[in-house]
Structure formats: C-alpha cells, structure tokens
Amino acid sequence: MTTVPVALGARSYDIRIEDGLLDRAMDVLAPFLRGERVAIVTDENVARDHLERLNAALLTGGKMPNPIILPPGEATKSWEKLETLTDALLGLGIERGDHIVALGGGVIGDLTGFAAAILKRGCGFVQIPTTLLAQVDSSVGGKTAINSRAGKNLIGAFHQPALVLIDPSVLATLPPREMRAGYAEVVKYGLIDDADFFAWCEANGALLLGGDRAAQTEAIRRSVESKARIVGEDETERTGRRALLNLGHTFGHALEAETGFSDTLLHGEAVAAGMALAFRYSARRGLCSDTDAERVSAHIEAAGLPHGLASAGVAADGATLTRHMLHDKKMEGGTLPFLLARGIGETFLAKDVDLADVAAFLDGEAR
Figure 1 (cartoon, rainbow, N blue to C red):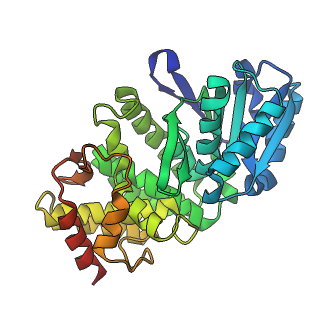
Figure 2 (figure 1 turned 90 degrees about the vertical axis):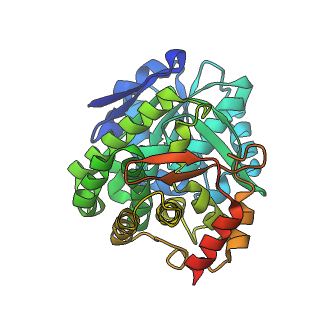
Figure 3 (figure 1 turned 60 degrees about the horizontal axis):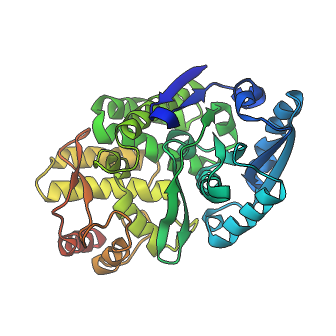
C-alpha cells in the first residue's frame, strides 16, 4: 500500500493507494467508523458496479452499510439533491463524530463533502473515489461544492476528508470517455510545475488509457503527491499557490457553461481544451513558445480529448464566452486572474489579463 500524507496540521490525513483496496476497506476504515451503521453516499452507476464490494467489506468487519443512492451526473450537484441527501443523513441519525463515506466520482465527492461540512455544523467524511478524475484531483484537498444557476461550484466550503482510499482496480469499469476526461487532470500536474511528469505522460499516456494498471497507479501516485504538496502550502487558496491547480479551468468553465454543464462536454474534457487554450493564449502574449503550445495541444489531441473550441463542440464567440467567465469564483475587485504559462511546467497566476483581449483571442480560435 502506498500512503501519501496531506500535511495540514490538525486537519492532516492520508491518501491510501492499493490495487484491490476496496475489498479490504475495513483495514483502513475501521478507526473512522465508530458506530455499527455506516452511511454510504453513491450514485446509481457506481452502486451497480462497486457497492457490493464495499458492503461486503463492511459486513465482514461487523458494520451495517446504509447506502444513499442518487442519480448520476452533474445535475446531482444541486440544492435539491443536497436537501435530499442531508434529510437522508439526518434520518440515519448521523452525529458530529460520525464519518460519511463518499463512494463515487467528483459529483458524489463534492456533494457529500459539502453535506458533511454543513450537517450539524460539520461532521467527518471519507472519500473513496471511483473515477480517474476523482482519484487524481477532486477527492484530495477539501474543496466541496454544488452548482447554482450562476455557475459551477459557486456554493461550497473547504472541508477536508479524514481519509482518501484509492483502489485503481475500480477503473476497469470506467467508460473510455470518462478515463480520457480524468487523464486531462493527470496531464495538468505536469504542465503546472513538473515538465518531467509531462514527458512521462507523453511516453505513457496511451498505456494508461489502454488499461495498464502499473501506468495508472504511477499516474495516480504522482498526481496526488503533487496535489498534496500544493494543498499543504496553500489550503484555502490565499497565497495563490493552490490557484495553480486551476490551470485550464477558467477557459474550461466557460466552455462548460456554454454547453449547459451537461454530458455534452465533461468537466475533464473542458479542462483539456482549456489547458490547450491557456497555452496558446500564453504564446499569443509572448509568454511561452509556439513549440510548447503546439506540444501541449498535440498530446491532448493524441489522448482523444478536445484541444480547442471546435473539438469541444463550442461555436460561441469570444464575447459570449468571456461573459461566462465573469461568474468565476476567482474574481477579485472586478479582475479575473488567469493561469498562464512561461513554458511546460512553468504555470503562473497572471492578474493583468484584459478580458477584451481574451475575447479577441477566442474569436480567432473560432475561425
């Protein structure tokens, strides 16, 4: 078993990574489950594929699983489903000292974490991510949220899990499109501050996407080590260091908003296109070379991910897309910081970006 610590003082926790760990979940969950009943939040798809394995592990350890099964998809991150979930948890008699188990992808993890943050003014939760995107990104770091009419993840809280349990074997049931979407977040860590890891992705990405377990496990380990380090330096995005994890997200969220935050464009697909756009915009501004921007786009395209507006299925003009950006939660004093790059592995936070210039750039991309 690989253990990656997230060092946050009193809020520190471990990320445990091991093939087949879901079947032995009680080996690591036992210290966090004080009562006989265990609340498990999941969705219909994950319940079909993985709930029986977790239930069996809990029953073997003398625990009684109480699953709460929600619909799959981004629409579940809503006020309505938050109310459904909190009512169900209160009905189970959840107390502050209990730990709720989130078994699923980013939607379930985000929703469950937010419910845990507000239920009785805060109770514990454990992440068991079942998608590549959740394993390498959203399950770590304590960002929890639901969506609103104004945009994505605008209602939420920082609430760290007590444990993250990652079993790469669950990825065997993940549809190829979901694997590719998660892979975008793997690539992100190389582009932020680890050029060697990006080169590793170029050499091993096809193996990972083809189902090679060793490549998947290595990518998960390196990704969560990178995220744990950054979160440990800037837990609540106060210094700007953690903001680097948003590479591709400002452009990506605008694309998601334009496509209605639907399955038309998955979050990871939007991030992939957003990263390629961020590098091309950086090249336009003379910050990085055209060669680096082309290298990023080429790898994203080779992975079967969208690398621009057309491949993301977005035909909107620049003014429309930048209007979506005005709802970005990173807005400060009317200015929107952008994650740009001086090269591969050299991402930085730029606070001097004119949205009119971004709109002009996007208009050029649309042609």
